[in-house]
Image (tube, rainbow, N blue to C red; front, top):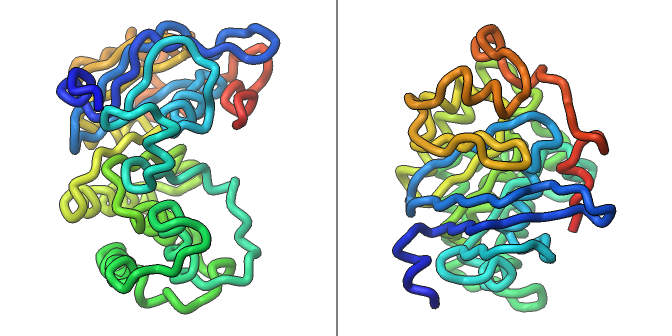
Length: 273
């Protein structure tokens, strides 16, 4: 294990550059260290490379320049360990029509910890029940996942990500399409998770007004890193440089409406594993 990287943070991204197959730069010279048990919010417009960066941290994308370590391990090795890093992809990536219950969905998270063909140990199943309790999934755990409300489905898939007892939890646009009450409920849930499980949380989001009062660090990304510091030091000019627009009004109405400037459309979708 690389002790220098462990001391520097649980996630260490050093001079990372990633290019699409056609040569277009998705990420340029990214340097980002995330402290243990902290909360980092990554904001930026569509096509900024946010999901691409998450997939590199998760070990789903290789072929980048630079160095990435998660708990001192290369991302691919960290992901294969099962109990180091876990993630919640964008909600639209799930097949909600699967004939499984919420409890079965959560137990699927154990595959990353114990292996595909091994039986779950009682201790792991007991841990799942604890997660179901803490995230208040138990009342609907026996119901089909497709018949649940959006908020209930979100709790179930976050519980699935927590089932293997990861040290790092990555969430990709978890509040996309969620109303104000739903966003508040989500951030309350993350506070509970932080308190109960002591995980490091990295959230990719457009919801700057919400995360500015929640995250310990904000990273403003648009192919390169325009800002990485505590939220109260983030200025309108900093965000405007990343979004290529005047955000005096956007800061109070939500930054998700900013136009996409990526020549390929949504750049995060270009970089699929």
